[in-house]
Length: 473
Ligand SMILES: Cc1ncc(COP(=O)(O)O)c(C=O)c1O
Image (cartoon, rainbow, N blue to C red; front, side):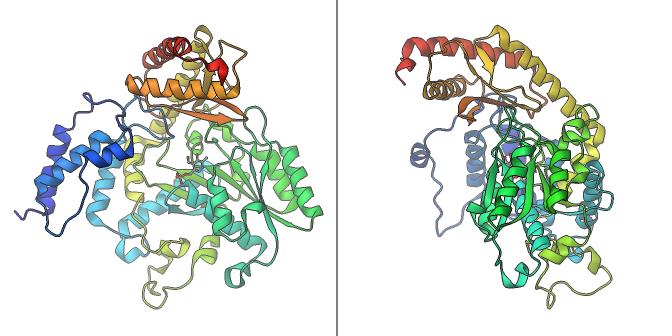
């Protein structure tokens, strides 16, 4: 067998998986980049290497990377392991298909179309469309691009002459800021609208901001709501904002990168009520659905628009006018080469089913409620009433502590939790206040583990307060 053959790679992969013991490792043991650079030789050379050498590096890679599959990984909006999706990902890599034309990706094209149908059904778009993208950031970019096209169709060929203005809440993900820059609209033209205590956009403030732009002679064109904000997990109210969008003839987008899967759950889907009133929706499968990165979609209520806006070029050599031309998803995309992400999403959706995803959300929502119920008997308090799977909490023992002191305590607690291998968790600031941000995305987490974490937080904060004078901060 050739040393670099697929068969040999699979044998080595098996060996790596056998040797990689997630039980024996901490959830995160990474430290300074400089120390790692000194310890780990990642240099390339003129000569080749044996698979044995690659096997050792693969093992180091897994051992040093945070263990995202661990129930103690509570840091980001994804965690856990979705085995059917992983299987799909491996098969995708073997096929190395690209999604521009049906000819080179026949099965994945049909799968992507089926996924888009299912996503649209959940959102409530009766005749919707969509295309898979690299993530929520690209989905938000495409939404802005579609909105720009609606108000200013000549922008595609001639650029923008008008002063276009978009609106998102002060809790929106930073990807909108990046997108507005990429689209040449300019970051000064992304207006940050105030949100309430729970992090939901205030419709009155939104309308006021639109009127202010109009008074300046600017052209409002886009409202970007968020379903599941990054820090607080808040859901912006769709119906009142849709009424505003209609009144001023603006595009209404919902960034559901984190929160849109709530639509699987009959019990909790009310959080994203009226999603069908939007013009577009972003949905990440690589967050709550635990599909390996990257897997996401941009959905649109109107058919044909994606192609109208995103197509251009390639007709002379790639997009042939054959019987399958209508299946060439590349014309709906801003990418040329695009990985067949549909396969892993399809595999896991097929294996888990709508009911399985609904159950996952219901279980995690219950876990969240159980954790919140533990807080009153601890030294910690909520910074908001969580509606979704983000819980921001902090030490409440001393009212004289400054914000800087609170933030420092949060950082020190997170560091200690990581060092003691209790949890890999982060802190975040919102509305001028800092807290520890617990993200619940993994159904392997049990309430007993969260209780232990909270008890550890109690003990850590007590010892920190004796070791360090936070009142000086
Ligand atoms: C609300 C929201 N939108 C968009 C994004 C960006 O998603 P992605 O990382 O898939 O580009 C994030 C990432 O955390 C997010 O929280």
